[in-house]
Length: 454
Image (tube, rainbow, N blue to C red; front, side, top):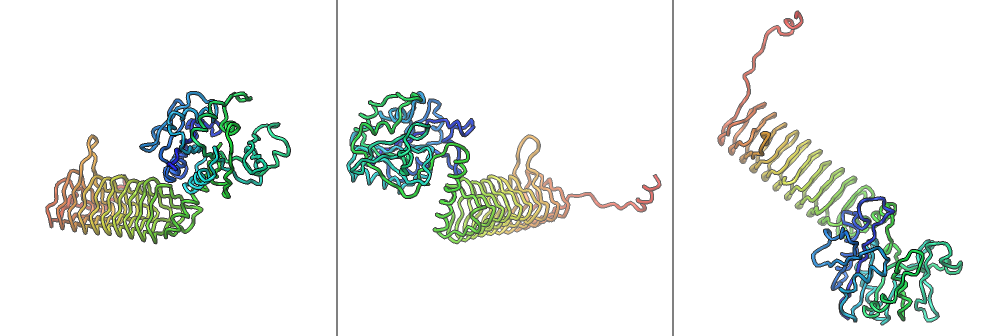
């Protein structure tokens, strides 16, 4: 059988979210909601993915390359939404998957299982169903004597279903597989003859036969999101899924309930993530790292054997064996080479910190290039901004700055140089030299007595 085509319905605004942001663009573990079923379909082997959106095309900027867009001009129901994608479903023998942009927990395995069942049974449609103890407003599956689906009874409004129908526990999960040609014919027969004046996709099943059920044993796979309560529930389940994948790959998450790891994060084996840590965006960590507690890393890259404690990393790169924290802030462009250290209350941005170099505490290093084996004393500051432009500071290898040194850029400190405590360095310090820039101390005798007399 040819690879299936996936159509993902994402045109609804989601008014119950009470948000100016379209529902399917709300993030779940760092990924817009709509991208969860998009990625699942692609990983399941879909030959094409078509996302149906509203006329504002709000989802277009987040879609991966190769994913196509179809526009539903007016909100006329799920059947009309699928019809908007019909021109992109060229082959009548293709299996068409219908997924929902607000049902993000569907997995590639679940999609492959549905396609396999549909192709093997040879029906015109296959409906994913689930058994719920409390079916609520889900449409009820009414089966015929031969086990195929006779009809789906809506249960959203009083009077939609009889008492016997409401007692049915098998419900429509809203994920379908269709034969493309049969689906196209059924869509043409849909009407909007209902209280809402909309064309519903389940009504297309009345014009197809046979319609089979594909029962899934994990109802969470098809949980939909209508409001922010649902969003929190699904996010918790998605986070648990991410944690489990990392744990099975050899990562220790000391306290999962207090740990946030977004969907795009990569972690190496034997890395330990301590409590109250958030790893976000494209953060990657190698093997045997120790991250946290109370650490946030956004789009950060950590090599093997890196330690980060009580710190905030944003776009920073840490090479093998680097150590950070506690209470350090590494901003975009901060690069710590092998075994470098950024210690307590240190801020670094747009700077290269050389191999084995230490910035132990209470320092700000910005727009600087620091060589290997250097030690920057407490309260070393690079004054990199003159009020109009940024300037770089160059600090060589094996340099020793004493406490309270300010380096006024642009300035260069040569290899093996020193600075005196309390110095404001405005000129270059040659290699091996000691740079001292401070007023000579003067003591005024009996100052306290003179002051008291005044």
